[in-house]
Image 1 (cartoon, rainbow, N blue to C red):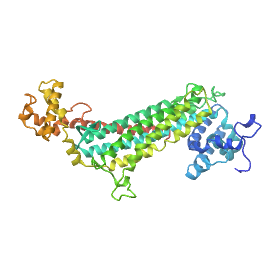
Image 2 (image 1 turned 90 degrees about the vertical axis):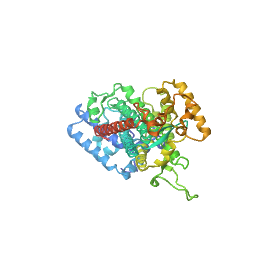
Image 3 (image 1 turned 135 degrees about the horizontal axis):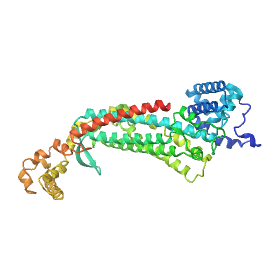
Image 4 (image 1 turned 120 degrees about the horizontal axis):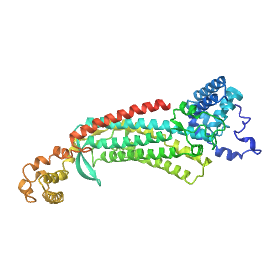
Length: 481
């Protein structure tokens, strides 16, 4: 198309004066909604199918339009093609661009495609398709991270580490048990995202600008072609709803929070003070000043990313607050926050590879799990089994810990006579009850760190991740992601 003559706007009939040139540039959304070209093409093809069924387009016209739309998508799939869309001289938005490109290819027939629809329903549909596809990507990347954690848990076997509360050593746990804690978070994150995908999976096409299409369109045709469960139930809600973007961003905020917690722990555990893990060199950087340094840049950056995600969610919350029904131009501002979190899936892919490359210092972790009276809870439990009320047992073991501290030994290094000074219930079997293995295995409840329980949990987690991967692959096929 020649740049000498600007094409007519999609809405210009009522206007006589040209737009202010600076306002014209400022209000265009093509500079960011170019990302929606695949969704715009898919939705336009589905609308064409509905127009054919309604008798507005002939079958031959429908074939021409759909073929031209496919060609437009193919021509602009590359980075160079995307740049052409983004920098188009005249298109106001992605809808306008596709219409202009369609007319270039098939002439005035391209103008018939907008019959019975509004840009309000187009953008609502495109964004639902876009978010749905991104959810499939993020869930797949979450599953990959969970798989890497499970593989590390298998490799760890019965390796032990200290657990912490208040950043103070608490009780020994299996390394696998700690890793599986993050798997649980990941599976919840996946559930939230899939719940979001389920709620957004209704098709706005046929809603018109606000009151519904003015043609008797069979809305299930477009909905079915696009993989939606059903058409939206209310045209006003359909064109003004951006709940799904906000829900998506909030679900991603949880992903970011859990990534940040993992990153923080790895950053701490990689310090000389902890020395629990060795950072993979492929994911670390050095210092330009201090030659000995190996810095955890990956985990530090991951720790920071939740701020960007949550910021996007906050922005959309404030944009939607107080908006009257139905569509308002304010809603254009919800798009960039939705696009701004596209880094999440690639970041998760990096984290999965990083997790797989981690090396644990088992000797150090094992030694730390057996120092600092981490078997005190098991010792109190020993007394409970002897018939001592827990509060009394707690006091007796607390006094024994204080004595051991002053003596500079662990609980299990006290003599039986020394222990009996705190209670006649102590017997020779106490020492077997506070070994590392016994301290682990006394937590023999569902979700506990007893060795057999963790083995069962690991098998269950493996099955749950496999089921998630399978269902997400099916959803990707169904949604055309």
